Each structure stands twice: as C-alpha cells, then as structure tokens.
Length: 408
Image (tube, rainbow, N blue to C red; front, top):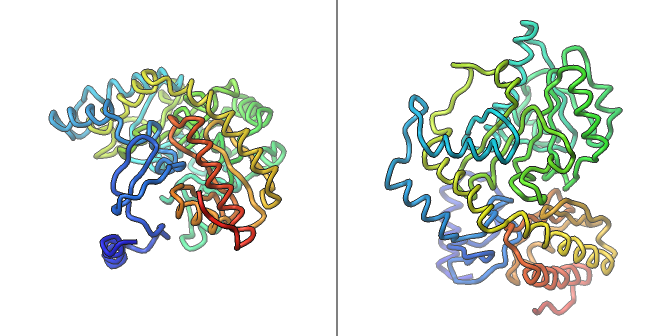
C-alpha cells in the first residue's frame, strides 16, 4: 500500500463515523466489471456495490443520461411534476406488473413506505391502530426504525429497542410457523423473495404460493422485498415472476438506480386506492429528476444490452462452477441461490478467504460470518466466472492449509 493510500485511510478514520469495518483499500474508478484503487491496482468485482451496479462501471449511455439531466434540472420538489419521474414510473409499472409507484431515496425508505401502506390499508378497513405485521427470522430490511423492526436478527435490533410495536416473526419456508403467527390483527406479511444478508435463501415455490393464498383469503397484504434480488438479478426483472404470483406491495432499490441513490415501493391499484393519500407520506428528494432520469435509463439499458438474457446464460455456469468448487473443498458445506445471487456456506469464518482473494485482485463479500456472497454485475461473462473461481480456489486452499503458495 502506498503512502498516498495510507494517508487517505488515516484521514477517513479521523473524519468518518466508525460504523463500518472497511477493507483497507481506497477505490478510485471502475470500468466494466473491473475496479481500480488509488494505486492503480485492478480488481475483478463480484460485489457490484452490493448488487447495485447491474451494468458494471462507466457505462457511457447511463453516464450521458445523467450528465444531460444535470444540465437541465436536478431537483424541483414534489409540488411539481417532472418528466423523468413520469417516464420512470411508467417503465417500473411495465416491468413489475404493479400499478402505483412511490420513489424514495433508499431501500430502507422503501420499506418504511411499504409498512405505512399496510398499516393505513388496515386502518381504513376497521379504524383500529393495533394491527400486526409478520416478518421472517434471519431477514434483513434496513437500518431505519421501521425496517429494523421487521429485520429478523435480534443482534441488529437489541441496542435500539423499543422498535415499532406489533411485529411477529415466523420462519422462512415454514408455512406452519407463519400460520401460528396470524391473528385477526394481522395486516401484512413481509419477506425477501430471496433472503440476502440472512444467507442467500430463496423462498420455496410452495411456501410463497401458500402465502399468496392465505393473504388473498384473509385480505392481508403480501409485501415482497426485492431490493437486492430484484432488477434482473435472478434472471427475471423481479424474482416473484418465477413463482407465478404478484405481491400487493413490492420494494426496490440498489440496481434500480445503478449507483444513484434511489428506491421505490409499488402497489396494486386496489392497495393504492385504499391506503396512502395526500399528506400521509412524502419525501423532499424522492422522485427528483436526476434520480428518476437514472431509473428511466436503467430500464432502457436492460433492454438494449439484453441483460436478462445474459443472466440466464451466465448464471447456470456460475452455479456449475460453484458446485465444482464445493466438490473439491470439504470446508464448503452448502451452495444455494438464484441467478446471479449465489452463496457458498463454509464450516468456518470466511473473512480470511475474502481478504486473500482481495490481495490477488478479486472483490467478494460475506453474508454472515461463514457465507461468501456472489452478486456481480449482471454483465459478467463466463470468462469472468473462470477468473473468479481460479482466484477463489487458491484463497480457499491458502486458508485451509496456511502454507499454500498463493500465486495466480
């Protein structure tokens, strides 16, 4: 590490709040599926800003769209209409099959809006304010109070109690555990279609189908969090499309803006007509022209670059190569995922493996202490997969033995 990079890190440690355990590199720029630090070192990126950069870095069409919007207008407030928000909403509706869209600044804010939608929907039915929401254990929905309240990991919540009330937790893919939590006060069930931070666990088809049936029967809102698993990552624009169901409310962010901070929650016409109304919800920056210009162009680029087709081609290859890797290393005990959202579970902490891979120019992240998560740009090639697997295999061998030669 150069003195220049060391100086940057020292300055950061003096100025920034210590809420992240950052890798000891300072990234400078990116191009395609590669990132470069301030010393010029190249990295193959299998993180994509945590499932954000669907197209990789320095996509000229995307960059030009943002530059053009900056030269026109960046912000107006929601007292006025703006063309990028209208265009983005139309494209979101077409892609999601939903009817009403609210743009936010982040995924956590999208969750907050979804929870408020559910509570207001129930309130308008009976005038009561004691309604309950069922969430899943091991889920992750964000760090704000509402999102944290439905995050199924006590470790994240305990220092910030009390959370918002009337939240119950069930087990993902265990329909009986959900039924046990349903009461006459239940107004919504929220889950990630594919759990991300909790270990890359896709919902079972039978589980999600039965949840949809129960919600229909009891007029409970089904909220699907597709902040990480949506926007093409599983091979369809939204993962729920592969289950043959439609949620009442869906949340989106991350690859929705491909780097620009933007999120959304969307709902059916029925929910939109019987929930939030003027004055119930708002956001100064939400839906501003710059963010929505990004969203609108993202949907265009998905079509222009045939992103879904690439995911459907490369994802099976990635899955095959991860299976082969598991067969060669006893320390890998499970492999699961959907599309380009994959996870390898180890019988040991994976921090050292991730660090060794980074030393050799491969960026990976974990999902919990013993799972490596693979959420690369959706533009990766089979050649990129081969390159990744070669470095990861050496990092695993090094970690297993502590004496392996570590060269590529």
